[in-house]
Image (cartoon, rainbow, N blue to C red; front, top):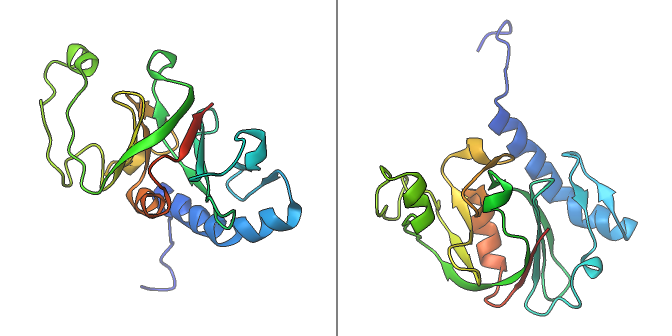
Length: 189
């Protein structure tokens, strides 16, 4: 590469860099401040006590307005903050309390009946792999058809782009998948 070459970062590279910076610095800064703080991506870092009575089995808060997922570990040692995609409309958005009931390390996808009604040309089934809309990992919520999952289409992250689920970068959902326990509390606001 010559000295005259101009580096033009992609949106994904910028988001990945911001997420890496955030992940490396979020917990110490949050612990020192002891409360709400903004990070480099302008996501608000939150304290769990305002949303959950305890951290038994861990807790996940999904803020559909800021399009971010917060995770707190049961032992209070881990706090993670991830960018997400959210549902495209209020009709597809479900808010409230639920929990993680199943973890799928290689998810396959089937459209829900309402998805098939809206999009009759969609396939009836997509197996695990690069074409699967659920990415590399999925965590089932107690609400039928709702998941927290990865995506191979990284353009969706940070946008209203899902049919109801919460989407994450595959590398983020893989990390969260290892942290989350079955029975973890989930709150979508």
